[in-house]
Length: 568
Image (cartoon, helix red, strand yellow):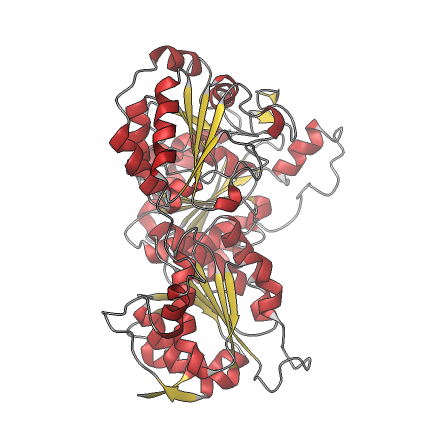
């Protein structure tokens, strides 16, 4: 049947199971939005306050649901406003498809109004991107984009469609059930093996070798990385850890890949890792990292990282092997499949003596109790007591992020939404919106700081309009806390441009957006505010006053040996 490019796009999105789009319209994408008008009963569109918020929302939707997130933006500044969100998704392997529309093909390359080479701009931060110049190529390109975004190591894909292509007409053939996922140009590409859409089957000899190494080990340690979360391999990982009786250290991106309440959990690893995790890495004789890329915040000094251990890396992406840390053995494959094969081969082991050593160290930071002000520990303890255990937690970036990851016990993939690789201040509220839209029956908590909240508080308008009952807990210390911490410890107390002694009043800001809010200074006020936030049925901002000089503890300096704590 004959269809316009805009209609073909909408039909293809339905084929891919898309039920929600986050976006912001503009001139070049108007044909698509005009067609969207006829699909409002089948596809929900969330109009955000800013395109970056739309991209973060698509990302939060993807991470929390396991589906591919989708966002729309117009050309020029609309498209470039997506860049930070795309880079965030790329660094954390989150599957999103960003659809932008550009000026007509006859205007490309002429510095036309609101023209930008968005495929050139985003080439380093996408798995793949496309400029679709012919309407006849549009359907298969959309299908290919979704296949690439969700396959292998997930990640963002961008489609840029000139305006005249969205208006042009061609014959459209629906994707039949028989050919679902493989059609036309996409099928040809797969047959030629130009694109590998399936995760490689792990080498069984590599599996057998690792089993031998496990059997020979007296002091094994597992690292749960983001690959466990992306693969939804949490059940297999926990079964494996229990079977080989190994302590488990968790990266920032690994939150939810291994239950924080499991007795084998040592806590976070790395720069702000627990004493138990970091000491275990230094003392273990076998380190098995699953879906972990050994970033500079984990392997702070690669030359001495796990210096007494044989290091094994399990990853779906071959390019990550030996990139940051030299390994003694590796397995290429999807975490879920690798763990399934290992579970078939390993026997129940007992490492009680090793565990006694590891857990003689602290797995969490202990904060002093005070009466005249709130501490991070008191805030997080109150939240854990009052909010549902399965609450989805979205964070911005900074001290509050580390405190939340250190002290909350995440139980399932997609429960923690945080920018681990790119460190994007302003990620949290957009991601919380995406999570709440994708999980309407769950409580969603947005944890932020007064620095990060300034970068995304415009999305309170989105939260209010769509009646999203997101609870924002603001750690307000009147400063860029993590930067101040570094200035205190490393830069001789030179507090250059980090003090935030200025507007706004965040409670009044929430009220201006039609939301509830309260400033709290002690645990009694905090508990009352949390109960009110849970019961009110709409968005709520809790502004928690904490001391300017609270620090994230422990801390190991960049480039230092992992047990060389600056503060503990």
